[in-house]
Amino acid sequence: MWVSLLESFNGIPLQVWREWEWDAQLFSDAAGSSGFGLYWEGRWCAEEWPQEWKQGGRSIAFLEFVPLIVAVCLWGAELSHSLVLFRVDNLAVVQTVNRQSAREAGLLQLLRVFVLQCLRNDIQFSAKHVPGVHNDIADALSRSQWERFHGLTTGPNERGPIVNHPLALSGRFVAYVVMAVHAKNV
Image (tube, rainbow, N blue to C red; front, side, top):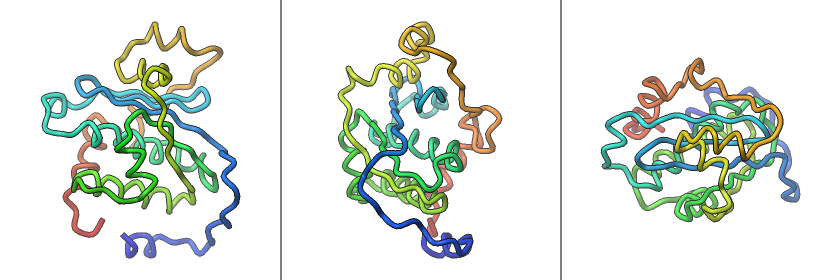
């Protein structure tokens, strides 16, 4: 991971750590049989899981972690030089992010991808548990409940361009995550 970071380091030092006053709070959710949702100050992203993911074989913690990677890939440039709080309704993911360690091999590989993207964008991060009943917007997105989503939000909402994004979940992003999970140098 460090070799990859050093190869792409632009020479600009990371900002000095300061007291945790969050520049951004992102809410995420994953539904094992549906997909995931992300919400950040009017911006949102939602995608269904690939069919093979819906059929099982991946832990809910793994699925709940994927949206965090999508967030830093999708909005990394906008979040650059920021303190970001990820609001997640899965305690295992909260602990993984905050401890920067995981026992589950697949989750550890996702953590490495996440940390590398945060380092590349100079994003300082933490995670905090949000009870599922208070994570309504991300939950509605993860389940493709569009009427519920629009009822919970006010004003204009800007959908994240996941479909046109180079790491779109519909194939290329999945390949990226799978490659990262199986990569030896990540």
